[in-house]
Length: 121
Image 1 (cartoon, rainbow, N blue to C red):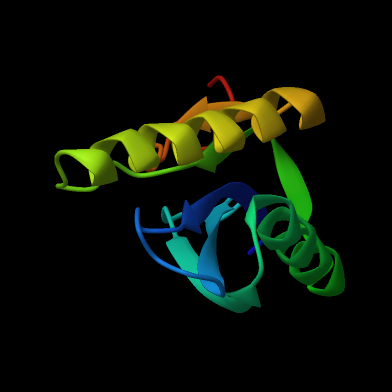
Image 2: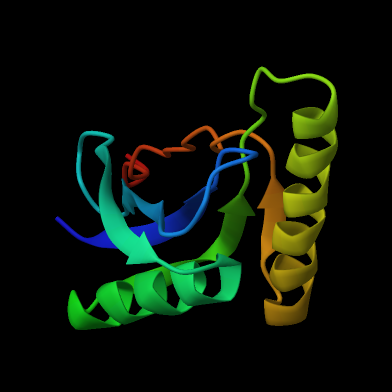
């Protein structure tokens, strides 16, 4: 089974202090069964550091990055000043995604899995 890195979720709740965690999402590419998974990378200082550390883990595992690779910053159930902080962090993540040529999402992307094509009879 081959796996590819599909996304990095930046987990910085509004109002929290560093360090933060990030999650790397994986997707199977050649299995008969769709396989999804993720690993958590701890001790990230900020958004760029989280991306760099996740990139190092992806490289250390010898995984390719998906053609459609996204940075994800989730929506948190907050209001008032924390809601403003959430949007400010989302813009930082979005700017990093654009700078690196990645997509930006607010939710973990749904897996797309295609069954291997059967040879024509």
